Image 1 (cartoon, rainbow, N blue to C red):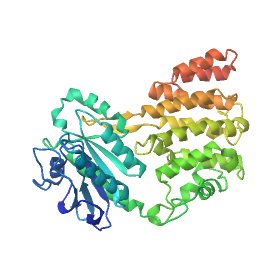
Image 2: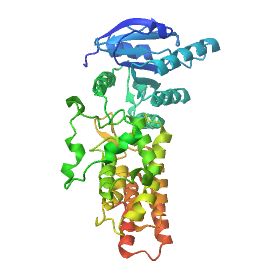
Image 3: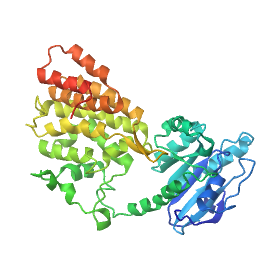
Image 4: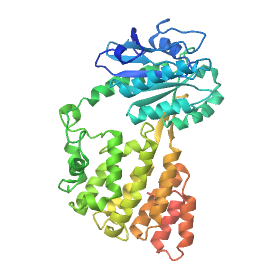
Length: 431
């Protein structure tokens, strides 16, 4: 069993009662009948640590617990109880909003949801509020002991709107309790990892970020590119994993007006910098596209901005066969969608010990719309790039065949190599 020593510290009805400590906090939230108290007792393996009741909605304040003397859990009041008066409901909502928006220690929130019903607007609204503050959202599917094995797949599907796969838990059977303990304890390690020196990489303005990404000599070999020689954060170096909202905001701003911001750099420097942004082995900028904790509209904006990048930058500067790489930007024009679409899935552990790759349907739809727009640009380079991305979308998301077929139908006199490539994309056989 994962060590999870819990001790009750205090209750608070407002800011003045919050513990004054410098430790990460994980909030437990959920509807009044979801079994939060029972789950907290199961996590700590201590009966009576959190008061349980046959009458839901008894918790009316914030209850703080110390975990392993270094982490904290805050049990939030239950919401959505039908017999609660409007005055009581408003008071609880005020307590929760004040805590969610004003607690600097809050790093994650575990939202407990009955696995038989899935998330409703209350839980989704809470998740959006957390995501806007950069707080990690941990969906927890409770009471899973009441599900038959044959019902698991349908239950998992109900959680798709959370954008993050849930942890199936049962305070009765003990299923998933250790997994949730590990997830909560990992929040403390993440907080420790954030204590990096302030530098241009994590406190930069947009102009400083541009210089940091693009203002470097072009390496003769990819193994010599500048980011491989950056020391890790724990060695006093600059943090390459940018904060998510800032990362996607900066990328979208750049891609929406690339000529204005990249005029000082050569095409080779631009290619090298774009590779750093997009390639997940170099930085995590594009990892955030599939992270459900980040606002969906911002992620969609970032994807849409690639169409403008293609039109303004790639179309006039790339060759008519980007597969051969005769011009500096050919490589990124060809490979951008390979890196973006192909890697846009999340690995999810299955109850039987296997795992699945799950894609975000909203993000895939945005990929499809953007790729269709790029395919319509009168540029062979952009069309090859879009076909590359569509080929991966056909294979990995079962989307895009109609777009490719329309392109073939509308261009009866396509160059032979381009037609052959389009047919490969139609079959999901691009490389």
